[in-house]
Amino acid sequence: MTPDGILDSAPEGLPLDPPEPPTPALPSVAPPLADPVSLTPLDARTGYARANGLRYAETDGVWDLTLGAAVNAPGGSGDATSLADLARSLLPLELRGLIPTSGYLGTATFETPQVAFAYERGWRDSFARAGFPGPDEEFELARAKLLPHAANGVLLDASCGSGLFSRRFAKSGEYGAVIALDFSDAMLRQARRFARDEGLLGGDDDGAEDSGPTTTSPLTFVRADIARLPFPSGTIAGVHAGAAIHCWPDPRSALAEVARVMTPGASFCGTTFLTPRVPFADDQAQRAIDAAMREVQDAVAGRAGGARGFRMWNKLDLKELCVDSGLVDFECDERGGFIFFAAKKPPAYEEPEDEAYRPTEI
Image (tube, rainbow, N blue to C red; front, side):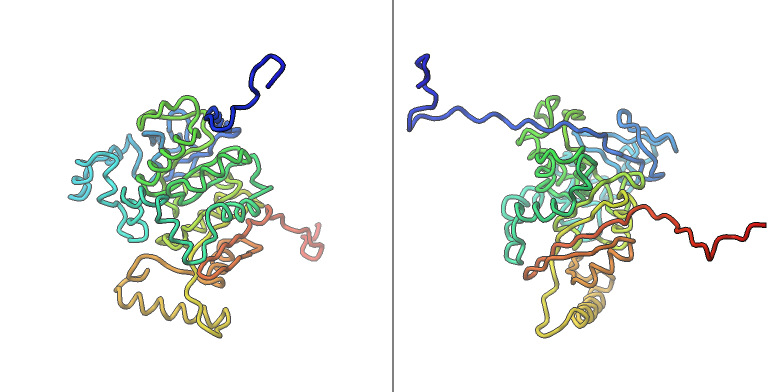
């Protein structure tokens, strides 16, 4: 009890006052959004691209920056061009994922509202059976690679899903802005609900789904194609892709885009599923066996990508993918069927001055 007779703590058994709600960190830098056609900057207030006159909209707090999403272009306002488009347009916004827009199973699966709802309600927990250590440890693995370069810069959480890691990055206060990007509108809606419930959408969000832009939020939600990232080159200080690359339709094009948007010295890191390890096989043998198995899958499915639309990886294939995109210093951590991997974009290239090749003065 304090000298003025007031209890300094509640007696045992009495309920304590509820904790103060978290105060979201304010963005210190503007997210560098770009027109997906020209890849030139958008006006953050109007969504207008000066390069071609296209304009994009932020609806329910989510920017749609996919190709064809411009609201002032033919078909950009949601005009139906197929029976699927027509059927989708008749559904409420939150249910349109029942008719996915992607024809690739690895992408279409996560467009459905059922999977978006279930992802953090048991779906993601099942990854532990493959060796995933859990979101908290995976977050620390990513943080160790992204920092210090990404500190106070723009961090991209690619294929963010329901925002499991986006929220952790935003709450850390270590980044100037966090962009939660996914192709699935249903996932982004779920991600925004979770962020709102955790107090991360800022004071101008009233809790409604159609509350519009949240200028004081550390999070920006963007719908985009991973193989056509809507950011100018060299503007992203770090990229994270948790449990994502096995769902990408074209990983080579996607990683080339990741490398393009990263600043020199930035890190890209992610997690995925490893192919089942063949006993006594070294890395090269494992890679050859995996390639043969993919060819069989493709033959059975009648198309590239395999029957399921998901691809498991091995260490050498991941390293080659990074190297082919110009990334260096590849590292990985393998645990059962889980792998965490990281690589860096090298510093800005400067052509060395070589006396032997200097032109002769005349």
